Length: 635
Image 1 (cartoon, rainbow, N blue to C red):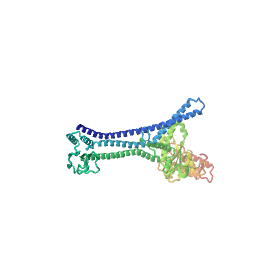
Image 2 (image 1 turned 180 degrees about the vertical axis):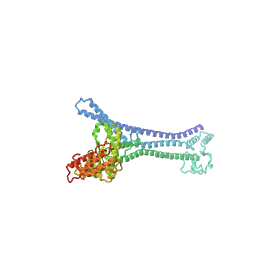
Image 3 (image 1 turned 30 degrees about the horizontal axis):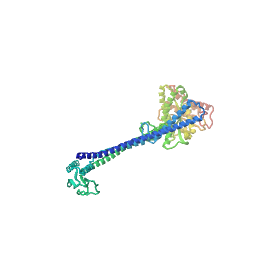
Image 4 (image 1 turned 135 degrees about the vertical axis):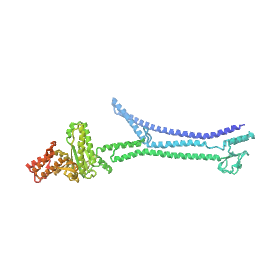
């Protein structure tokens, strides 16, 4: 009744439907997984939007309540439109501020970022989750393809249909035999088939030596027992007993399993290599900017501010750290320009905090001032004065720093600097005097430059004194400066002012004169001995003429020699002879002692001053305890 072709076709369709059902099930699972990922992302975005909406709604409600309260508290119904405008603006500001605060809070939780900048948490999620999901999808897809390689040699559905048709007694034995032969054609690996007591095929003898795992079997309508004796077929009480050569099938299954295992292992190794590369790149994205910040911090701790190309990062946390650090760097850089750099560096290196306190220390103190600065200011425009002073202070500061000095402050056009504090400077008096002479040389070059711009010539007067004074942090606990105080500081300032009295440029005190190597390194002239106002002790004044190896010229050397002889006569109370020597020295300075003198030099102010004093003492001799000092009554 039922053609054998239709039965076979139906059996084939059933097998394909079963296999297609398996693939369809896996595809459905893949689609569901993809939809679940999309749904999770939508839910997350919905939560963020809801949080922002709730926050804004709360602030708007609070704003309306405050506006209502303000309306009830003000009985005046004729409020101006400006008041309403201000309330609206305040409400808008509050809403904007609330959204900004919420945004910042979401950023800190790694849930939100702007301008495409990812947080560290978002970067890690992007690096791991997306690749894991892609890997799982790839593995499921490949496993679906691997399933196609499996061969179904024992088609249970086809055999069941054949058994059902043969048991209906509707077909002739010839038709059943034909259907069985078609079944053998479809199942060439069948080596034994017994159906309803009749053996249709028996090739057992050719396969009896195969391993049990290389044979497969099928029993109808009963289930096979747990333990089967494969020594020979036909031992089971079954209507249908079929045996198959499963050697090739098992080999195919083994190959598929090997390929599957190899694929999984390769996928895992690929994941490991990819994660390693991504982790290394991720680490570099974090480490390189942080390493640069660490190096810059080390440089900032040494007050080294160099402009270097910044390593950019798209991670918000790194950008926040970079921005905060560079703001701090700029602040410290600006701060270091207001205070002596060496002072801050000394505290930083020794891990000290600034606090009030001074201590006595032997230092060399330097004061300088621009001669006639008031007149210069009257001749120049303010911007020209600023430019000129900037160049002047830059050149002088460089000399002070190069000689290991500390520039404490600019006092108008004056400069205050010290040597041997806060750290030790060997032969600090020599270093201080050297800086004085170098400043005069630098200024000479600046005068040539300024002359081309039409600026008036600038000369400075310098005073140097070495003494034990108080050095440290002065002021109030919340506002202090590193400075010096004591009688020695006042005397250094007086020495700078006394240059005007003697017509000199560089004066040092007797304490500086007596410091080691001073007389060996410099050419000095003993100018006078005075008691400055406010002091009771006398101070010998010396002019620094130049370095010891410097050639000052025969005239200056002769002048210094004669002047020294005059001072000796002066201290010995030989005022008449001293007067003549001062006169001789002045003539040398004028350049008219010899007939070849040019006569372009001016009178030496110190010679004239000492001559005048000699005349005074010749008329009224000083007291018997006079030590040669002149008491000054003015600063």
